[in-house]
Length: 340
Image (cartoon, rainbow, N blue to C red; front, side, top):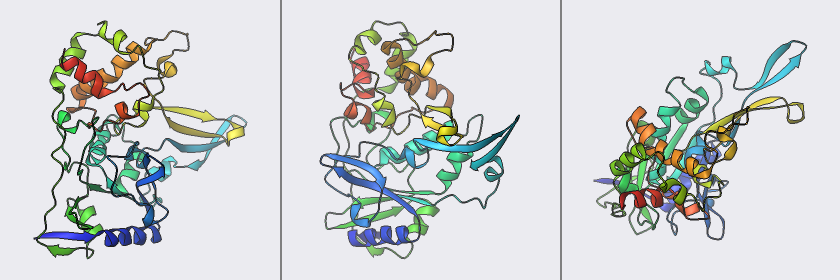
């Protein structure tokens, strides 16, 4: 027997969580032809069909675009910490961290969270990330279709991959969903909300495998100075949309905002595709052009990160290519490498 929930029941669950003060996020239509993950003001805002995937990712639920680390007050030669999550807060289990629920995320988004866990718990445990991660429940919606830029099967995933999900929904075609609870968080969320049924959901078969990641890894390791990078990056404008919409890219900068901005230290998203990312105070830039920056992104995803953490820094969502104004991305680069 399976467990099912109607679409109205799912929306009621969302309404109940919003009423309880939980931050609920999910796909929503923000303008014609643009679907994004965003905080839902109403269960009616939740979009459950008619799109392949949102154009952003759920990483900003646990790793915000900008977050205040702490405020500070300068008094003579002394600096006093004020607002923000201070060191005392980080060790205080009672410090308030809002509960979050992500509904109808794609499996390729949820799969990014265990990948991000590595980088935020490597040589330093990032409590800002970890506290949000622990407070977040992720309910995925198995893919019933895929787009031309999707390539999850090329990096070891598929349209019903459970990794990173607390529960997964499968469309049954009659306005209801099979619910498969994966973790205690998922079981707690759907406890008493489902009905038994003999119906079983099915996911899309997924895209055909488009490249071999080991072939890509071997190429980037052995062709650091290859003309390929210059040829491939000719049309790259360095906008960074590839990194900002990627579920796994995680570069950030730490900036101090002075008195006019309230005296605070912030963590903000950054990208290896930006010219200033590697600029030295001396004026030297070891990655002075877009070819070297494109190389770095692919090298990081298929070699540097796997060498350190044992897995690819990519879930095959296709957002980088889908959102790039020039159609560049992991898929186009990796496919070109693999096909010679």
